[in-house]
Image 1 (tube, rainbow, N blue to C red):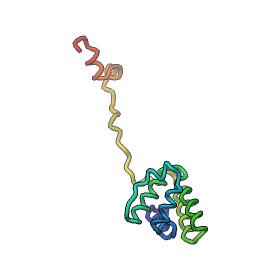
Image 2: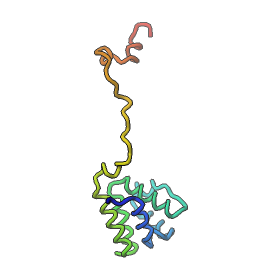
Image 3: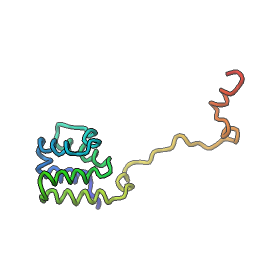
Length: 133
């Protein structure tokens, strides 16, 4: 079974460099600029880490960058090993699996053509092209 974001969040909270608010600030400060400036911060540690994970997932290599930074802060701890395994599982999943619970967006703009006249001149253009416009 593929890991969930919650299992990754829990594993990160087990890392001392993430569970401690001041250390987490230092980790986040070392992230690439495009990631760290887009994290929605929260006073609750759990929600702050959740937002960190979601933002890192939105950027190619974001989770891997997070793991590398945590490793610089705390070495190769057991808690970090768990995080590495979960991140590897997240990264190796196909994109379709990551968003399998998101419903497909309906295409409101496609409609069957009524006739060739509609295809050549949409209604709003036909009105504007008339001599009375």
